[in-house]
Image (cartoon, rainbow, N blue to C red; front, side):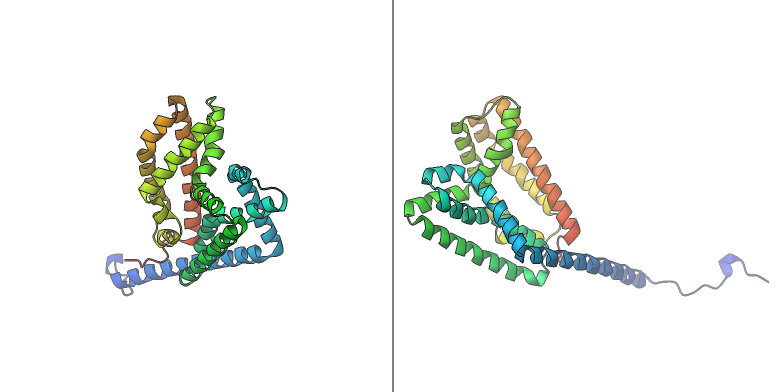
Amino acid sequence: TALPSSSRPSGPAKSGRDVVEADDSEDEERENRREDRRRMFGDMMREWAQSDAGKRMQESRNKRKAARVFGGLVDELGLEGEDRDYFLGVAGASASAEEDLWGKLMTAGEGEREAVFTEWESENSARDAAMREFLNDESDWERYQQYESRLEEYEQVQGDIRRSMESAGVPLTPDQEAQLVEVMYEARQESGMNEKWQGRGVMNQISEPGIADRLEADWQAGQEAMSVGVSNVLSAEQVEAFNASQERSIRGATMGLRMMENFSGGGRGRNRE
């Protein structure tokens, strides 16, 4: 006689431990696949960067960026011809250094990151030495350092912020641009953004998940910190255009970070609980 379905013998039920181990195994397989993709992508990027074509493209990109953000300093120093070209090459590499570090660390394995960072620091020191020797004047060197430390602000003010103001019909005067750079720079220094998001801070950020969310929170705190200073420099209409530009910038930055984190696996350096 057939047994009722409720009375039929069945195989041994999986214990909670079996289920947890199976889940852990699946998580590990997914992490391994992600690590393989990250390693393959990192290898491809390094091969391209080390190729002649890759180096030429990077050098050209660096010089274009330097010509845009260091243009005022180039004019102040009166650089022309080969001197101007050399300056733009070194300054452009420095201007792209932080972006380069993010790319390298996001595609490096956990055990490779310290070596990547050490090499990056060495390259920065070599560029600084080369620039100081090239300028051959302490006052020019100090002016370069002052300019370079505000590069993030110069790039924003001379880029999307300027375009946003012009599109809104409320263009900035040269004096306003200079004052705005200082307001934004001071806010960045006081907020501790450098320590959190540049240099070794990058290694700390990529060791934990939620990179984009943390950047967005720190950005919001920075906006609040400089709101009074910005209002003292800009008109009400200009403040509105400034805020719109800043919001576009953070959206683009966090979108890019989320894509990179999803691809490479943010928080690889943290053990799961």
